Image (tube, rainbow, N blue to C red; front, side):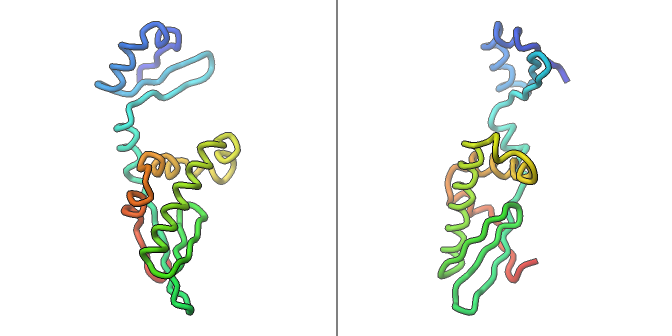
Length: 140
C-alpha cells in the first residue's frame, strides 16, 4: 500500500482528496503516526459485515425486553416494536456519547464497540438502526 507523507498531503490536499474519493483510500504518515483517509462509501462498505443482534424476551407482565449482544444495552417496553425503537435510540445515544468522549470510551473492553459505533453514527436515525437489528426470540 502506498503511504503518503503528511507534508505532501498538506501541499497537494486537493488532488489527494480527489484521489481518495474517486480512486482509493490512502495511508498518511505524520512523524511516527499513521492515518487512514477514505471516503464515507468505503467506510460504509467496510462496516457492512457488522450486524446488530438482539435477544428478545417476553416478560410475565406482558412487556418485551431486548438485549443487544454486541453492546451491553437492554431496553424494555410494552411491545416488540416499542422495545425495538427504544433499543435503537439507546444505540444511537450510546454511540454519540462514545464518540464525544472517544478517549475515555475507546479503551479496554469497549474498544470492540468501535465498528458498531461508527455504523450507527453513519445510519444517523433510530429507524434505520432498528431496521437492521436481527431479533432472536427467546435468546440464544
